[in-house]
Length: 257
Image 1 (tube, rainbow, N blue to C red):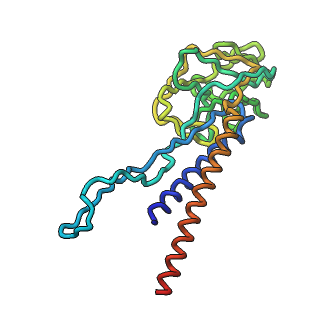
Image 2: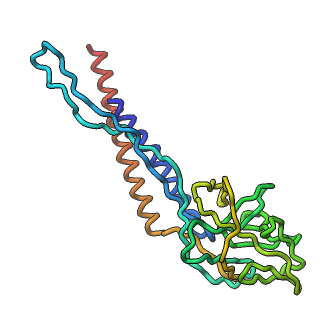
Image 3: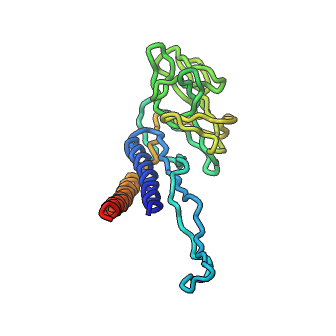
């Protein structure tokens, strides 16, 4: 009896994590460059049940395999989906869209310094601070292709298609961008990413100033998935409650006897 209780409880844990992932996707539907995540659910190893015969017992069943029994599921990992979101023209000079070739694999990202660490972001909504440093939406320093902070001589600048940043008639720096082919090396840190491995410069990318890539969250599908997950959680919750009542009744019977 307890095996079924643990199976239902394990499913509730996995579904709760799924709800958190979907809620986070939904909450970032207006975050530029946000990449929606999917939860990968795996099942625990199945158990093989077998019937054991008892020699000398005429009522004993024939020995043989009964079948397999699932022992529940768990959420193995969270994987971001790096499909391109819709592109919007904003007219803001600090909004940058990075266009990658159609046959490109992996993900192209901007390099950013956050708390002394080099991270990578898909959010092209930048800002210029009081010291004229180019900053990310989360307050990190946008880095050049040389890995240095970009400080402008003026708050006004232009960005060419190949990433050259110019201000007051002079070239200041080249915008840093990397290409991550192995997405399994990415570790999410807030809305940014840490790369456990090499991050080579992105090739053949084009930058567009005054444009922004929106989040790739499918609002309708996310809402439907959220409701489905909620109903599944509720169903497993009822199973747990049924097992709890059965255990309570068994205890009462044992006390009477």
